[in-house]
Length: 335
Ligand SMILES: [Ca+2]
Ligand SMILES: [Ca+2]
Ligand SMILES: [Ca+2]
Image (cartoon, rainbow, N blue to C red; front, top):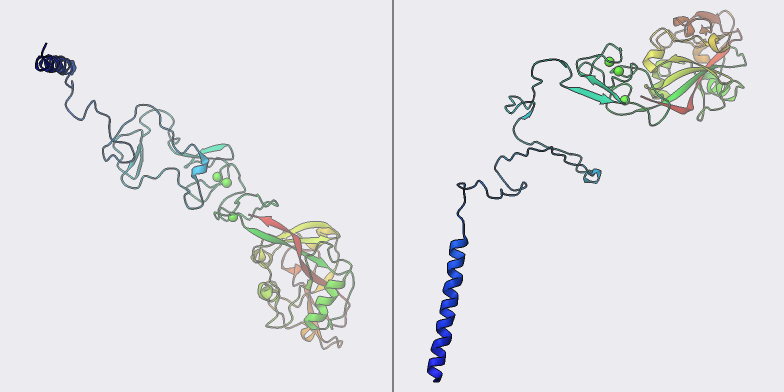
């Protein structure tokens, strides 16, 4: 066989093989049964502009580690409406409960294991989620509530949106008695600070709960003594305590919860004040004088919870009366 003929045979076999392979591929292809794009894989969820449906449930954001200080969102629908029970939401959020029972349960908020429809007063405090209640599991929690807890992990009981910390303040009456010449503000404060009735858990210095002059009135103590207006006030007698007021405004509104006698005090005590905490002109000349028959001072009394607790009667500065004192405790309330 010549070399030329051998090459011819080899190329002929190659062409025949290619022809058989090509015909196999041509006849093996089946055309799509649906017109595009059906039957094709949709574009990935994160880039597609097409509406996409999924028949099964969809759970998202199931890993809490996705939440960071800058990303607190688990789901954002930036544009368009959201429908629940409807495919045609007409508002930013449309909930269609359909017909039948369960009215009012279309939207409820669950807190502390109590689930409550937004229209319903589940805890009986007279308010609903739509009108001033932020916690339907607790009748003491609502907008304007003065209730509090004593643990830092307490509740937002006044529905302010945060848990605030306020000091507890004590009121006490001195063991010792004094004439009206107390030595002015500094002298009176010293008497309170050194009295045996000063509570053991006062946080720092105590001070005399008296009005001295127009610049040093009881009602100005948030400024002159740094009193926190949100603080809670208790009578304290040797550790026996009873609440006097929920706040600074509550303390000076004319009545208190309990009189001093509820913790065992029985006394008349210098205050020099009117019921609203303003200075009374009878203040033993700014607590410097005690000349009989010429100087007088206003005093409060331990028996009553009305305005006489601060402004009971006027006494000659020559009398020996006790002294009303206050201090900030080391304890706090949370609301
Ligand atoms: Ca309620
Ligand atoms: Ca409530
Ligand atoms: Ca609060």
